[in-house]
Length: 390
Ligand SMILES: Cc1ncc(COP(=O)(O)O)c(C=O)c1O
Image (cartoon, rainbow, N blue to C red; front, top):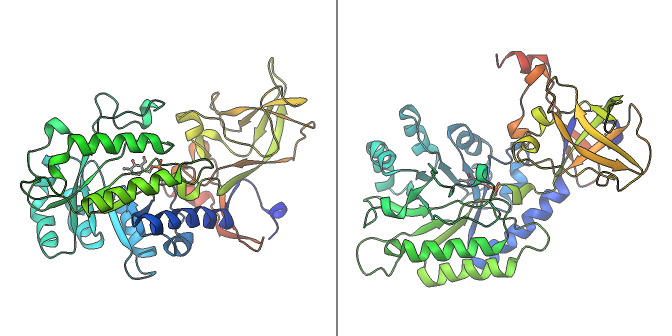
């Protein structure tokens, strides 16, 4: 199918751009010896997992459903892939399955670790499961947004140094931290240096007691964004490996599918207002790009400028009832008409995974733009998808 023939609203995943990102990430793995996992919370279009598994070490999950998805759709693709999971609290009736389908599990508190010990300990003793504690590095990047900052005051995410024991608890072999969001290399370096200093007692060479054999540096690394200091990253990862002889993991979500998807939408009406004319689109910020309202941010739109930059400025909004369902203000070289199609960019991440059907809005189809230029349908949705969730 040609892009012009796609029914809107529709997400279009760009296979070529996905591969481009994966090649960058694989080269980091190859050069540093570190292991990169797909954080499925950002992107979990499993139909592209065969491509992803060709480059990365595996996946990480935010709970049992994502863990199952990676188990079913990725782990069988080739030998050696890894399935990791972290959740602030695990349900009792999910722990046995998680220990079965995952090879790495990360607990958020000493209480959770001990509460589930009788279930995870046999798998850990048998060597099929690696157990870690998530620590709170208590390091905040300068430009962090509070909603995405696990080191903000009062955070429930990760154990602070003062609350960690003097020695690694029996059976624990790793530590995990995650404190970044869309960051360059310097905040990662600063975070690691703080962790290395504050949590030194758990690293190999500590001179007393058991030490970690792996560390997970979390996500939030904008590795595939132009200008990211990849040389710096490779040298930090190599330093950790050489200095301590431990396995090092990164679990980015955004970096994997950054700029690798679009949301194609049609202008349904144009409403005159006391400010800019408003384009009513068949896509919605609240339903189809919730981060626009949550973060908030103004998504890139193909061929557009800032308000006033080009001759025709409009406010882009949606056909839901929510007054604040506004995507942003954009300008264009030409007047926009009803029936025109607009293309939002960077729509593969934190979009499809967060969709909802508020107002009974239809979920956009999910399409794949293949490297030969052909677009094919991955999934389309209808009324039943709305109804079956209620
Ligand atoms: C524990 C953890 N790991 C990884 C990620 C992925 O982060 P990003 O998509 O910003 O790389 C997140 C995001 O919230 C996270 O909470």
